[in-house]
Length: 158
Length: 288
Image 1: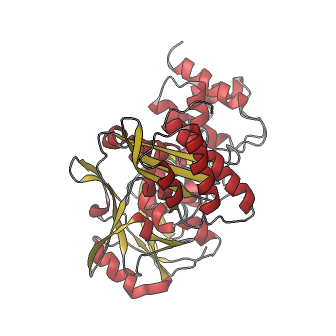
Image 2: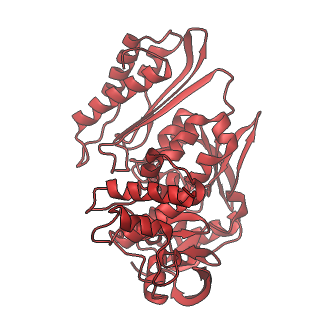
Image 3: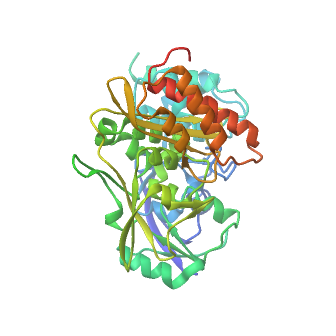
């Protein structure tokens, strides 16, 4: 089986990798590019821990071949803030009990980022719907929803 | 997952020749949200994937007042849900696509991929059957159109020949007095695969419903119309009693599956409830 040379932009940086066709986008990010913020959870498209943004679209990176991201602009959780810093959204997760063990958190942050980019003033129902593809087994979601609503308010300048 | 060759034909004829050349060792690839799971579990282990992503003819959503709606097979669910012409002329279809599965799958999965995979527990097949849709199929040998009811053959099986590709879905133009409603029933909100789904369309002129279509899926191997329920409603002013009778007929008549997600009796009971409620909402009936 042949290898493929792919180029893409990840968190604003041009990247290149030589990969087999079967390489999943989540594995490219974690194993080839060493961006381990993106988590592999269920690997069956259920849990959303691997969520990233590809050309503005929130996707599950375990349900996508890396080859499908050729030439794309990918944002992972590492791209939300400079190293050592927290974005306003991340800060709100910390302040509102939006995480416990933290394993699902990168996926929730990406889903929330995608939502807030499209809809700066979501209702609680819209937040819950936008997080429908992500599972958390610790917090029970109330803290996560509160975090996203708080971030929306903060980002709108209140 | 075993490795494979990733082929990227530029047009339908080239894709068709590739599919024909590799036969059973080959699968057509669109968004990947369903096929990647099957590959991972080695339910299928093709040596070649024929990616359709570079074929322009498979893209785009177009509406024409005379011809109706043409949805390119590679249209993602989220694109379908947001397309202005779909929202305006086919709100039932847009609403179905807006709530299918979850946001990530809607952003990556395609309508054509969904239909070709022919998973029984999914939304588009039943909705499109209720809308009298047709599928446009092409190969290097030519093109053909099929009513969508003839496209689904059995669980995970379609009428596509090995060298054929689903190019587009066509939905006829809606009548001025067209009404329709699609309902999915999930066992729990966290489960994204419907246990039962129902699509009802009709024309409502004066008090009577005509051209009634009742389609039931997800609890059947393939979605199916229910002629006895349609006949009960056709030409009548739909009342709560009539809706209940049609729902009972549908619950009796469908070929209900029985599996770990729900046994036959449960599925029939939910078909009855979901169809009755769908009819009540569609015809503004009291008491639900």
